[in-house]
Image 1 (cartoon, rainbow, N blue to C red):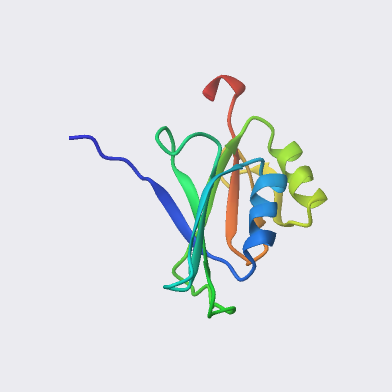
Image 2: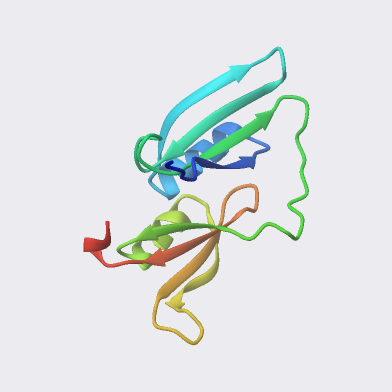
Length: 133
């Protein structure tokens, strides 16, 4: 039996703004979208590779709801990159908020940063060597 994570779903208050952020600030591609007006939602799937080959983000836009509370149970999504500072600069250039500048993990050597998407979801950026990808 083979098992893997397919996607992480986030609710968004502005689908186009969120798609733009994930494409422009984080370099993901819109892989597919699906609109179901009968049931009042639109789904958009974004990622760095095909859904068949990697985990992706599912953005859910509910047509009848435009405000959410993030709660205190949600942690973050992690994105790997070979240049943490460059990705943070890209996020800033596209209006993203850097909540922790790139630097070593407390008590470690790994370089990390934290940013927020337009809805306030936290994204950890983890620097990995180029050959890791």
